[in-house]
Length: 346
Image 1 (cartoon, rainbow, N blue to C red):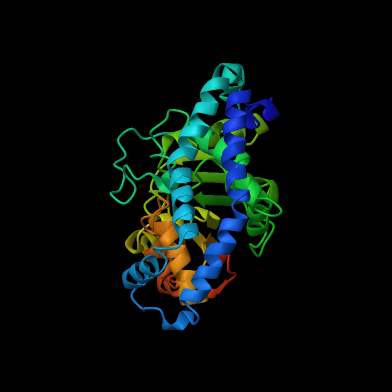
Image 2: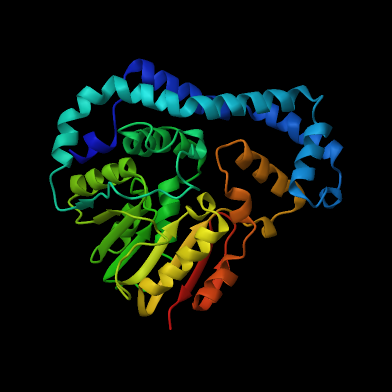
């Protein structure tokens, strides 16, 4: 039942559309090479680029405006951004009847799902089409569409070794192996939560997430695997849990989907929720401070037009400094992607 629920067997039309979308990116290597050549000619020394990111964006767009390969690359990226969520949803519609029994069975089991119909979503999240997939509440099964089709049948193809291997590697970075109660902040559809479960099988796993649709998929996944997760529809930065409720608090690449004010509150909340001696383990996208100006432009432009409204603000932050300000000690930050920050509550 687990395999049937978590690995949908797409119909021919949906499978072909998903495969086309994934293969399109793989087949665009020649265009990328031409764009890289044009960039190298336009920007022989990245340090000469404007310091202001908006000025840098305007400079690069003007410098490459007449380059056919660059125009084609942007058109392809825009089409992919507009279509991948729609294609995944259409592929799901073809097989949803096939999955009905598996869905019903996966709603029975040891996991707990607690939704809050009165929760007021924060302005930074409400209605935002993150990754341009569509707002998380735009499809009643968006958790499944995003978690099982977009992630596993599209995105996973571009990560050597697999995006789930990466999640497991991050989960294993926590300094202990005997945690009793772990919180996953912004657990989404449960991919990193699953890695935590498999890395620390004796711990009680708790997840918080704003999107009910994402939580529903995480809940079914837990039930399908016999995992007794506690899943709550809550703000990660304001959970309402008691002080010192956990001995490990984590998040996996959600911080770039939050503005600075919310990120600072999240670190402070993690500190409050940890017992003395407890550990914090957060991960996110590459810091702008670890890139040259050209690489920052590429990341910033991709985020600006890729459905990531808070990426620039978040990627410009020093998470280690924020962790220390929240009260953590033994703080260390390392890694390019994902960038990892760890700390301990005294």
